Length: 378
Image 1 (cartoon, rainbow, N blue to C red):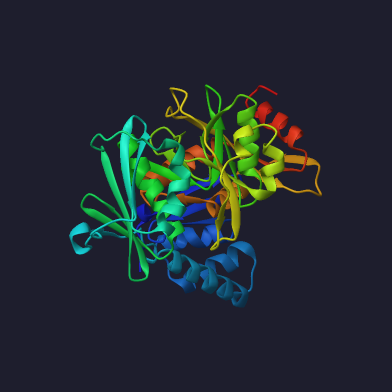
Image 2: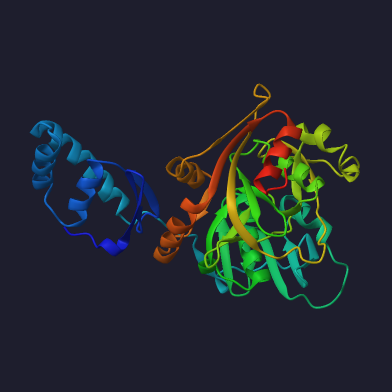
C-alpha cells in the first residue's frame, strides 16, 4: 500500500525530522533509523525489504531489524489512519431553542453588541463571570446573538443556523470563546493556526506568551507584568492567526486563583472587593480581574517568544532556553493546532523561529524583571 506524501509534512531540525500526519492531525519526531524507515514506508517499500535495508545500513541482525520495522510501521499506519475528528457542527433547525431563558445579557466587545442567552444559572455562572465587565445596558439591536442551553446530557451553543454540542459546560465555554473570536474579528476556524492554553501580554511591538498546565502561575505573572505597564492580551486562551502568526487579544477577564490573592491585592485594589466564585467541577476558587479597553486593545501583534512557566516555592529562580524539538512537544500538550496542511507547513516555518524558554520561580519580582528583559525592557 502506497501512502501519498502530501498527506505527510516534514521538516528537518538538527539531526531529527518532524513529521505531521494529516489524517490524525498528529506530530512525531524521527531520528535514524526511524527516519530511513519512514522514507521507505511512504515510498511503498514492503516491510521485509525495509528490514533488509535497515539490517544492512545500520548493522542490525535480521531479527532486530524485523522487530524494529514491525513496531515503527505499526505507528506510521496508526498515525496515517483517519482518527482525527474536528468538532462537529449541527444544523440549528435540528435543535429547538428553549421557550425562555434564565438570563439574557448584552456585552460590548470590539465595538459590537453581543447578546448571550443562558438557559440555566449554571451556564450563566460559568460563562458570564468572564465577560461581566463588558456588560452593556444599551437596548439596541445586537450585532450577534449566541444561545447556550442543555439538551439531555449535552450542553449546546447555538449561533445563527449552527449548533455545537459538548458534554462538559467548561468545554462549551471554550467553544464559545472560539466562535466569539471568529465573530468579533470576522474570521472562521480556517483562519487560525493555533489556540494556545496560556496567558499573553504585549508592548507596542510584540506579544510574549506564558504557557503550561493550570496552576503554574502564568495568570499571576501576566497580571504582575500588566501592573508594570505591559498590556493585557488574553488569559488561558490565546488565538494565533495563520496568515501573520499574530496573537489576537481576547477580552475575557483574567482569572485569579485564591493562592494568588495575597500577591495581587497590593497591586489591584479592586480585587479585594471583587466577588469570589467557587467552581465545584474543578474545585477552584477564583476572582476575576478585568482589563479595560484603552482604545487599541484589539490590535494583534506578532508572537515571537514563548515561556513555559512554573511557579515552584522550592525554586527561587531559574531559566533556560528550550530546544525547538522539546518546545514543540511541550507546546502540543498545551495547544490546539489546525488540521489544515497549509497551516501545518506554516507552523513548521513559524515555530522554529520562536524564542522558547523555561522559567521556574518563586520570586515574583525576579520573574517579572526577567520577562521584561525578553521585551528588551529589563
